[in-house]
Length: 597
Ligand SMILES: Nc1ncnc2c1ncn2[C@@H]1O[C@H](COP(=O)(O)OP(=O)(O)O)[C@@H](O)[C@H]1O
Ligand SMILES: [Mg+2]
Image 1: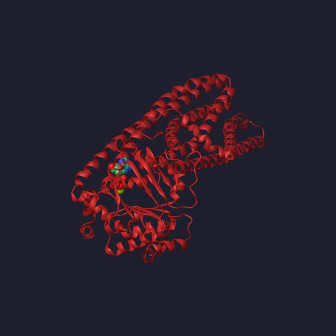
Image 2 (image 1 turned 30 degrees about the horizontal axis):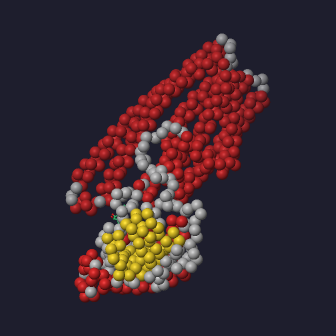
Image 3 (image 1 turned 90 degrees about the vertical axis):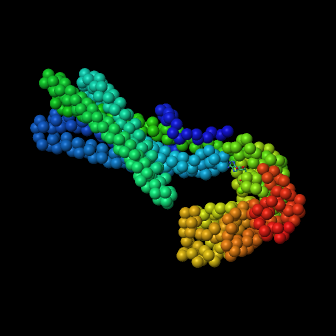
């Protein structure tokens, strides 16, 4: 079994190792990274030299004999401030650019990977989960690889730089700071973590409430029909109350946090000033040095605080990255073999099932196909008939190689499809499903789905052949009309004709039709049948039949039950000799069947 995504809510590991994967996403943009680093170093340098400038201004600026000296100090001051501004801006720009770029690339590669996963993967992975990873998790990475990275680098440099400069300014005073910083920071960190976990709780409660509201609003007709508005309002009100209570707990924690942080920092600052003031009085240091010292002490505290804040985010980003890596590392079972065999150019449309047995990965105990043996010649028309659950649709799934059978082989044009590229096999097969999928795009784009490179003229030809041209032209904007989510603006017959146009455009040598069970009105039915007749001409066709007309046209009818072939023959023979077929014919094809038998 390949790795599977089991639980998105698994406890997040506190290891930061997954973040190493980001490196390979940053590597292509080394130039930008270097620019970001240079601006970072220059900005930090300017920032760290500000206190020195302050000291000179205090110590010499005010006592200088002439205004020219004062001016010179302040010019220096201005230049340093200007440098700080310019390089900070450059740093922000380059670092944020990197963050956005990395996330864009990450999203791209996750999507590219996921869209190629096999059906077995999607059976165990919810689409919502994949979507949430693509959006929420990548956003977490974005904040850390952009702004977060910038804060980490800047604060680390400033923390170390300020400590070193403190030591240079006055070693004894720095000793006090080294003792004081943890005394102030530890309580701040502890309360900070508590606040964060409460914020997460609040987010969860809000998600619960909106989940409930979404569910109810989606089923609004049912809710109102059962006059369940009061009950639903109460349920939602309960959720909102929980949200509020959790939020208040967070707000209290937040207030405590502010109180502790502010008092702690100011107390520390005052103590440093106090000790410093006595040192100035004792003549150990100058006033300017004290000013410089206090500023550096503040820098140390500030950078330590932002580092501790980013730490939590780093952990969240590591968790997000871990989940994304799980997606990226998931391997499809169905993939191109090492040395794929190329299908012959002749495109005969020959199909052969050789003793195929298959069970779906999620149903290991029941076989969906058992010893399925069937040979289909080029251009032949085969109808599959059988009760629901007989395995008819499963044969299509295996032909398209969405799954590999556990036993037996399937050949297309003489090649075992498990040894060919899946794309190569699928390129020869056209499918008209029971339910046509219409994408939220124009009519033209919906048909172009059959062959992405097709020209507009080819699309219109296909539509004409599929008897879809007329109704498309009558749409408000013709071929450019938006067909709406899931094609709600089209009737059943119209959707089917779009599907047929797609298949015509694809021009496959093998055609798989799953006849719609819901009946169309006579006119639509006639149009669909005509379109299908055109489409089937000269192609090997397998149709899962629900209509008498279809089985009568077939060269052979295959009767299936419980994954097995029960009988093969033509309608007249089968009705006479096969009790299962006779019953199905009676049920599905109704009285008309009897007339023909
Ligand atoms: N994706 C799936 N996962 C597990 N079992 C499936 C899946 N699709 C179909 N089955 C099961 O396989 C059997 C054959 O299904 P199917 O080929 O869809 O039947 P038919 O098209 O003849 O009605 C049924 O028992 C069905 O429940
Ligand atoms: Mg089916």
